[in-house]
Image (cartoon, rainbow, N blue to C red):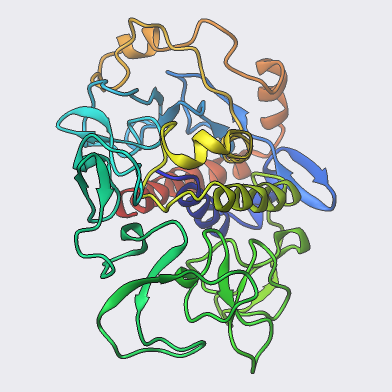
Length: 366
């Protein structure tokens, strides 16, 4: 799964958990923003005891047992019964964690399974045999997007044939988000004007937005897309972001520039062999550190990371031998979190279990 998909899931989460839950998350105020601080737990630990319990970045919270389990690495055994069982960019194929669809148009390949969209690996190159026709932007070059050939700026085309066309730059007119660079959005700065491509998190209050696009409204100004008006509006109530909005905006903007400079094509997934992580490592890792606040756990080589789901041995052998928490003393953390009233704790636990179920559904449907 790519970082942008992870970001989408996080914003779904923020929309679900507001008011009561946000006020009870331990954290602080940074540049006027409420920043939540997760409780980092280890592999084999419960991830349902508190709203802010977070698994290591190389683990996932099992949606049935609410226990942190290690994600499978390349070639590890896996099951499709749970989502996110493999490390990011890898998918469970034939019971093995496999890198799929992580290469774009024109990149060197060894198998069609590596190529994004509907492309084929032809003569060791990911190729769209129907080019310039396309079914999605994954079938196009790095500086192209898949759209109806007769689309006019701000208009809607009735043409059902889609072709790879030059991508619109920030400030150019557009008809849809797909017309713009990755992470940018097609938005109106105010009512009555034509839509233009806008850089990540740059649309001000009253600018247009789409509920399924989460990089439009300026988070640094506490704006989010209103479900009532489909415009950027101040967040209602007390919302805690799981990251610093200013850092997220600058990191995503920097990563976008790096991708463009390195001519990175659009891919379904991103692995260490994909263009973005390979050429924009600093920005890519910075984005991951914002999305994954808990560092990876040390996994013993003898641990069976995915195949065992019921044996208690998983908890014993899968637990890292090093300190699993980076937020200070566990006893102090537990003492602080237990200071809330019993009624609030029970409410948080119920919300947390429901939240994980919703996020699980979002992941498997993405």
